[in-house]
Length: 346
Image (spheres, rainbow, N blue to C red):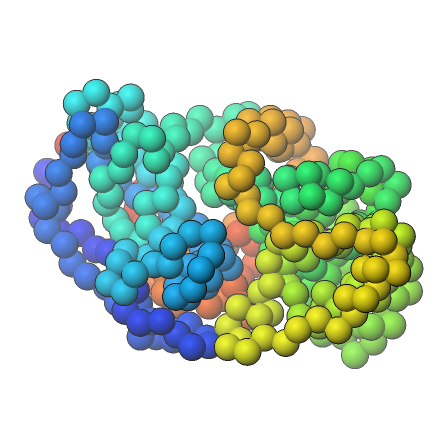
């Protein structure tokens, strides 16, 4: 039998700075209010992805996606199991799917908004929220299309122990680059060097970090930036001629109501360098190319992934700030339910 009710988490108010306990609130919905229409499916959500970009989605300002509205289910990519389908749906009961389901235990979604997933050798369905999902696509196209990384070049990655940063480091090594990762704890630096094979990992909290950075980097060809702020300014001081700066994120500024501007941007002129932002959705038609290469790395073990799993939808609001404090160790996801748990019930 299906449940009588299910839970959702909605945006309650927009925070000025840090995400607070009252930024979100839980709501109980009646299951029978879910109606599946033509070319739609009812999905039981199993896992949800937590990403730094979500902080931007709750700001009321112009961006690449409209802001989440007050009272609206918090936007989030996720995985789920199809439990019923509408007329003409291309899906079947029991299919594993990915989509932007949001912070909810159940969702009715249009066919066109979902993809059926089938984990390739060496991977699991959870990898579709990491290396084979938006995280992986962001790392791949940011590095290769925007960064134009070449063998023998020096790649520096900030936020290197995060989900995107860790994959960028590994893709950089696969491309034949010298890779230097920046993280915020000794254990994260040890993981980057010992498990992921970066040439040097630097702890930005070290009192000698600036000296360590200059010594280890020398001059860089590609800087993949997940942090922004002072870290970006430091990288701009160590540019090779024709260097490329990839603006993926600025996690240091997301909670700052008045983020500071850059100081060292004139080096872009003197070194004939480029600085460019990008949005991963623009590469949607090219995703299969990236999935194929990353899947090959997962299969042969040359690409590794790590997850930090938080249990329960109710804990999503308290888990999201972990991304901004560095408290997570691996790709941060929320487990909402077990896969296929509904297939025997409906």
